[in-house]
Image (cartoon, rainbow, N blue to C red):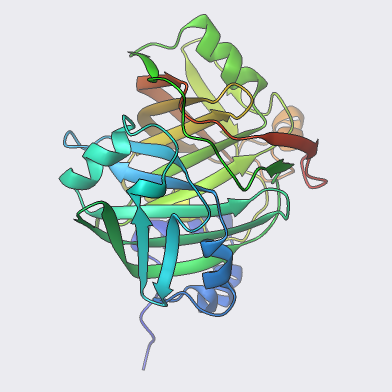
Length: 307
């Protein structure tokens, strides 16, 4: 009897385009419908989580939540609870309205200092001041391309109201932020409605900003699952998140993604770590939040895997 694949058709299509079907099949055993082993303890110790959501217009967003240790808790292998009382970042983030519109939620738990990350996807329901997530997928990711930094385990509540500016075309300050970034986070969503949050990293300047305002992002060698690109293959709606821990600011972009494979010039092969794969992102809307969070941090070093 043929086993049902844990991957959807978009993921399988991109795995085939990249010639990574065998690797993806091997790693599929790590994708479970429950949080197992030490992952529960890892989740319970994190002061930050990146969340992927969809708004009422169908746009996908990636958000940062910062809170006291235990603000997200795996109460058992199938259930996560987010306690809003323990969250110290702004409550004006689009995350809060989006989960009322659509329950599908993708969470990324990442500890940059240890280069560890774990993804949990599922369906959320608000219960008073708590958000309860029923787990549908849970799995770890490889440590590649994570820049190490140390975050304080005791974030502070923001001392004044957040200042929000937004637009549809990136300004010069936002473009400079993107050009100098070495890390960002991405939320994507399959046709079936599964929302996912992931991480991308490289050396500063690894994101190209083309003349038409399109971001060109290299796809480095990875685990072969192609969860994010598989979602984009099916559904171009994507959300990006850039974080400035020093200033306590976030930059959220929502727009459309497009896969760009078989880029075989010498320069493109060098930029992609020899994969010849990129993806493009066109901003349709952006939100910049000042005084989003207050947390101490210290940069340590870049990933040795960065091309």
